[in-house]
Length: 184
Image (cartoon, rainbow, N blue to C red; front, side, top):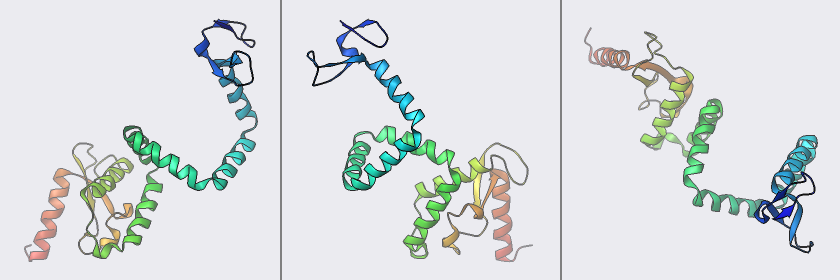
């Protein structure tokens, strides 16, 4: 047991961070008090903390990248959850990133993966959670206004998406097929 000088409570030794310069090798404040003190400091000195973090990143870009890669490989489930939440919260940023990605790939000569199309579809359905023709919210699908086969550069552009229910989507494709075959 050790006494915390800040909260005046006796706590187990594992409730104290290590400190090389003290006799017992532990800090004088418990972990809870140290964390609260750090949080209060970061709140009061927000700009300084951001500037320090940015300066550290600029000075250690390669090392930070290596650490980030290692963490991502060690924690794929946490990274997937984070990515999904970020994508849901930032659909416009995802659209811009996807558009830039496709331009880098020169999509005219590239096949789009099912996973990428599924992500595009999810973004479209998140932006418009109802059928744009009959306004139902059940069995939604994303429809390419400009066909992706003819206009691959717009295949993942959210402005080329129309959210439709399965019935309306089938109806549109049936009409399109009839028009292209000359059936009235």
